[in-house]
Amino acid sequence: MSHLTSLLLNGLSTGAVYALIALGLVLIYKCSQVVSFTHGTLVLLGAYLVGTMDDASGFIVALLIAVPVAAGFAGSINLTLLSRRAGAPPVSLAILTIGIDLVVLSVLTQQLGSNVLNISHPWGETRWDLGVASMSANRGIALLMVAAVAVSLYLIFTRSPWGLAMRAVSEDTEAAALMGLSRTTITTLSWATAGALACIAGMFMAGPPTPGVTTTVAVVALRAFPALIIGGLDSLRGAIVGGLLIGVAESLAAGYQHELQFMGSGFAEIVPFLLMLGVLVARPSGLFGSREMTRV
Image 1 (cartoon, helix red, strand yellow):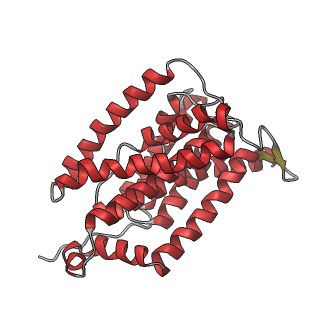
Image 2 (spheres, one colour):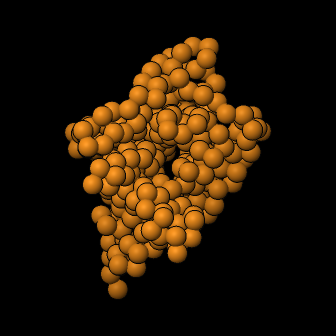
């Protein structure tokens, strides 16, 4: 029983990191109807920024600098490249984000090489003893962070002018423009927010129990895409649920690998995508996504 509990806790804490990434993807999609394939690299960029400044300035200062830099970089992607192609098919914009991802990833890979950047998290390798099981403090704090971000985004979307403007732009761009709302400004802010969340997720992803910042961070971050699809492209609640489901499924598959040997040694790595396919077959719009209705 303690083994199962430990796997569930580890899965939830890992899923929290995926959820942070997926939340950013949902914000971008809600405003621009574009699926951003740059997000894996944005997560790596955030971790890289924190790791490079950590030794010189300390963790707190490094994080306080890295988050706005990552947010500014993500916002500039929309402002300088995507917004200039406003009105283009979403597929072509998604392909453009793939090109941006390849360029940025190449630069980061060249900078990192085979090195491993360590981030001196204040909580180090501390583990929280929860009685029947324990979990990494790093991932536990990530779980709390997701809860805080979820509440904040809910309040922003329902109470703040920016949230109302974002909802207006996502629902009817032309009507929002007639009301004086700038689509470019709103989408750039959503990209910047997503970049900040990606940076925070990268910081957690590069902490214990993982060894540090390597180029594999970008690859692991791609598991947030199944979380996005499972929850629904336009659902913040779905991003959180999808991320947690992916984390738990991955943890259980890895923990019971011995019993699942007939599925192959790398079964845990494909579980997120199998789960995604299962949800797509049963509900193409995702668990909480909006169903598109066309009047004929």
